Length: 397
Ligand SMILES: [Zn+2]
Ligand SMILES: [Zn+2]
Image (tube, rainbow, N blue to C red; front, side, top):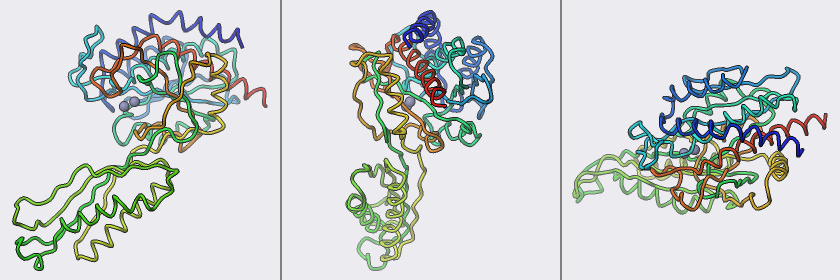
């Protein structure tokens, strides 16, 4: 094992400068989701330099690169995302974004760089394991629906035993890692309630059907009743973010629209809550004679780490890092479309520290940056855990 660790570290050390240049190039030339044409081409060229990896396009810009050793060997996948955000880059660095109002403020440039680095290490060390690897370079993680769905729908997970992924975390110091079993992120559901009543003069409500009254009654019920409905072991958040109705102070309007988000952490909760929302709306609306509609757009399912595989991966990571480099992380009510993969196959998603004392900007902030020393650390870790995963598997067989 020690020899393997040394070999991996040697191979990532010789790539340090090149990987930093790759990351800086990607950072300087960010592209939004589903528009990552140059990013995708640049990464495919880097993959081609490594050796013979079979490329398959997914959507217009996403792709997979397969390291195939033998059809009889098991498969795992390692995923990176490639898209940037519609945010102005406000850093003062040589690799500042040259594309106006577009910035790698979520660290997807780091993710892609690390997977390129790991692909090279694993390619060069392929004689030391019996397995096939699908490197996933995913487009459009940020928009809804996320690009991960395209990979699922194109059957890119068929025959894959396990998928690994990771996210840069500026709250964690460089060269640290956080990994927890079960749910890690929430599913965000964007909802919209539309209520249609009958407008009229504010002095004669008996001649109108007041949609504001009905809308406010529905919202009040949802704010209180939802939290009385479900098991508190599966947290969720219901928030109204926008209400629109009426134009004049003395007129009862025709319609009422409310919009917001529902963030859930279990699929069972999601279905029950949406049903409850719909029933509340229909019941209250029927009582007062308005017509109503609930519409929603589903975000990616929660990132949900397979319990057994998480334990297994933790064991491998323990072998390559020191105890203090394993840090506690909290679950998040934010979203990440890696959850789409985990609805199909078991997966493990990690958080990799990219922070230091000077870098304080959060993800999605216009000044977000990473400590580049986290690149070789992440390359070592991803390469090692994949080789160990295969070696363990083959010993078991
Ligand atoms: Zn993001
Ligand atoms: Zn992200």
